Figure: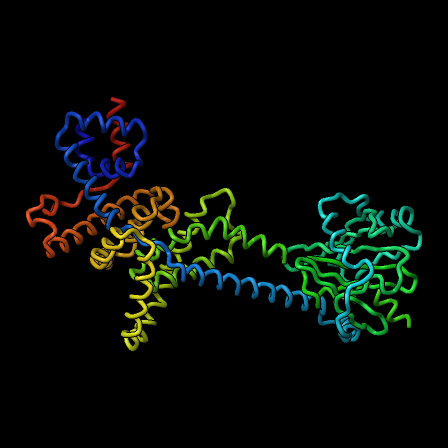
Length: 272
Length: 218
């Protein structure tokens, strides 16, 4: 055994000093070095050489300027990403088909002056936030009948022309004392799905959901509200039913396009 | 928007914590502070773009070093070659920038280390210049970053045995150049035993293990 230790000492010394030998191999070598001066001297020489190399290779820390540069590069990347996401959305929502023209016509909205928030609009973000971790009370195809039975028979569940937008389910809630239902949608994008919430609120006055930026879509008035994390598009129907569409994943423009593509706005618009 | 913020803070916590280590590797791979900064920035940006593909329970530092190494091998050197023409024209400006960055980097070190850095950095970089890329990469990953043979083998996509022989030869060449520089500046006596040329040994742990198994079974 000693013969192979001595003849492999270059390999063993290296693995030993790099702490890469198995426990038994290490003990064998250490025992061997007690008796074998040649191998002991060799390992000592290698140790001091390795220590020279490592000391000389020690490097300075990254300059603060570099850290600042990296942070700026990441900011730019985040901004690029948001832009790409929006572009993908525009492509998705305005397909090269017959509907494109119809949707484009509807989207010829004009932004009116920003108005001060009044009514119950500010509570909406809070309601959505609270509901995020709460389970839905009904899911799938039975959602609409369940809402008619438990919320109000006259409920109109917003439907979207695109098959990529799917109603997942609903639960009952309340917004500032008004009975409400939270509807959860999944929206398929190219690579992933994003969540969209719609809160339907009974017995509202026309300006109860106003605030943010007022926009006209045909003869409908919508409001776009933004918080630090959420975008909401709100609308109160002629039958005093309030709708607030909310998501944390879309730009205000895209959310408006999405809402306008729903039957709720589209149907009312075309019916006139 | 929420998701982007979460990704960013997770990346900052797990990846940007290794910025100093990455800079150290880049500094030794590129052999100058300016290129090292570019390499670190490019690599971190790339890592951020591919953050979704990082296995959360694996070694983040090794993953980042793999990106630094690959970026260095694949792109940085090509970029560097095409930039050399431009650099020649602005050499004076460059050397001034280099000094500024270097001074900044040294500010945060202990005075002893800063002094050591100033006195030895030139010959270390010169010694590194003399190494083939593969040898230098193995030495940097092991002796600057403290990675294991196995981690280095994964990064360099080669067997552990190859890592060992690159590392062995890289260290020998490096130590020999450093001794030569030191000798020429009078730090080391010319008759230092370690400086005598020796025949190139075979580095092969597997061979040793096989041999040992055979002897053990006798």
